[in-house]
Image (cartoon, rainbow, N blue to C red; front, top):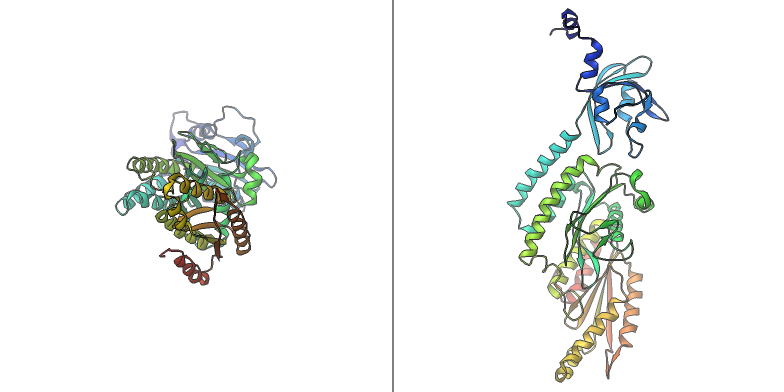
Length: 454
């Protein structure tokens, strides 16, 4: 192999070694690592200035100063190279999730370094885009569109290594955001610590001025609307809530607007995880999912997601059975308590026969029952009706809490009078699942008595 330095010396072009450094396409810089200030740049070439968007800068200076101090910086890989004298290869993300480099570093005996690096940020994003594309074509052969969405969320999380993702749809009859599709990174399934992701996600729908189809947490739900917090340093007023749930990075965006808006949310506990690199992959997911949801809506797919009793706004029996299965799966996955309340209302069928002459009377009674029940429940609670029985699903509610809710509802309904009619007697029973497999049989027996075939 010819020696490049010797070869250059043999030429008579007047080319100087300084020019080689300056015009080398790789980022070349010299400096050192300071324990408090991080990477200190003492000299750099034109490519360095171009990548970081600086035309003039007074050296020496801190890398944090060059980047504006708004993102977390990771010098761990460079610090290791400082302790390894001579030449060594290196690959690392200087700005986690947003700026990646690879190349060579020379460490001097005085603990200063000379680095020649290539920006591989776009390459990392491209590789993940290709992986997502291949997964999409694989999934589209296996599933119909509604099931495809769940597979896409799981695949996206696996490719970008985020921990949780889900789609929320606005339920106009109950005036709240409802989690329709959710998934977690496969390797994390079964870990009860995942509960914090779901807790945080559910809170976003009810803060920032209450529940409204135009706002989801910090996201303005309009076409093209996006909400990004790539790292805790950029979280602003959301920082305390994110730290409380150990969330370090989030991305949300509007999937569809109109009468049934939908929002996608993705969360990670790793700072910088949802930065520039992964956002390109997420944007690809956005486009694909928007197309699927629009197609579903056109063929009444979205309209069938939330089949409701037209009188009470409660879920119909078929949809309620689906919701029961979904909530049981989530309780088992996240390890949170899930309670069910069954309320058998006196002689509701007999009452309907008495009211046959006045068809509006029965409807009025059912509507009043619906109002009375819903005003005593939280936004995250789910209500449904199976003939004479009202079924309530209470996520994140232990047995004691379910008993309190049941007694409060019993008192309110038994005191409810519509003309000469009363709803007494009301039979109420409860059961609670605490995320343990050993409790499933008791829950299934309870639900079977209510008319569910699980």
